[in-house]
Amino acid sequence: MHAYALGLQACGQSVCIWADSAYCANHAELRQFLPVDQNRSAFRDAKASKLIILVNMGLKNIPQTVLWRLQGRRVLFCVHEPIRNMADFRNLGLSKVEMAKLKVMRALIMLQIRLSTALIVFSQKTLTEVAGIKPVVQHPLLYVDQHSQLGPLTSAPNAIAYIGTIAKDHAFAEFLAFVEHCLENGLFPEHRFVIATRSTFDPNHFAAWGAVAAGRVTVQSGRLLSGGEINAFYADAAVIWCAYRRSNQSGVLPKAYMFGVPVLVSPALTGGQAGDIHFQANELGAEIKSYAFDDIAIAIESILADRVRLSKACRTYYLKTFDYKANIPTLKSMVSAYD
Image 1 (cartoon, one colour):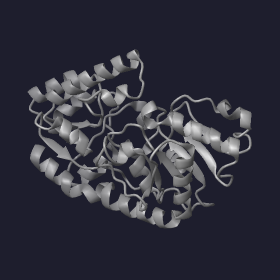
Image 2: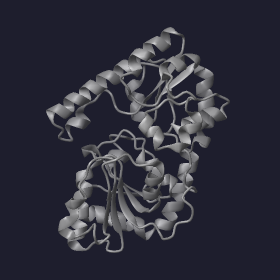
Image 3: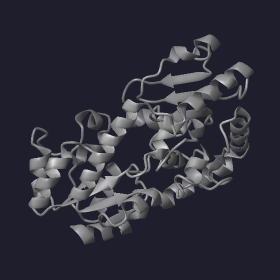
């Protein structure tokens, strides 16, 4: 959201952000773009905007999109999730209730897609799925470089980290099982394991090993993390888990590159299901072929053994691919086409 605001501002646009108050409270960088009168309706104020970008799905946006279109506004909707094939989700072993929720969400996303002027997509897979429904703008996920905001590190990055929502499609259970295996067998004794998520997770899960008390495991869970807290976890990581079971795109991956952190990925990201994920083996991290403990350990060891070179490559890739400044020409073309 911040990257879009800065990028569009660099294109000569006047930008205003309307977002959840709790989210904004944890992201001070957004304040310069918030409406002066916080009590005014975002949807009423948006009448003054020619171009409206919906960065996420929201129920309130659906009827408002109808109104905005009737008023001649142009509404661009960012499509983050696949919309047609539910097989990927069924293969994860989701319950009937979870599948029902996903089907409802997919129906709402399809409705928002059909109501919008055009779509913004971030992967080739999504582009293929929405082809022919609406005009499409494609570019990578956009970020503002925060690498220098933390200042010099007091120690070398040390953690093997899982950052983000706890989910079956992110293979959290596989990560957790691997951590338990390492604690039981004394693997990677010089490194810590980190779980940083707003999802609920009990740190006492590791009580049997005394791992939290001993500093071998760090768990931050159960609340929304500030931007500074999230950045600190990235900056302290030596390796970040992106070995997902299903993925259409990854927000963790570009953020890892931003902080020069190599990633551990799975075939779900490098081919087959995603196909266009931003990853190069032996340049930006390592790929596992299975969730066998030995496979994971060997891949992590290969990253740690060559981390300095990989870290530099990750930073270079971030700057040329995901930083909003590298994508200003695309944003200018988008504004020109729809403003």
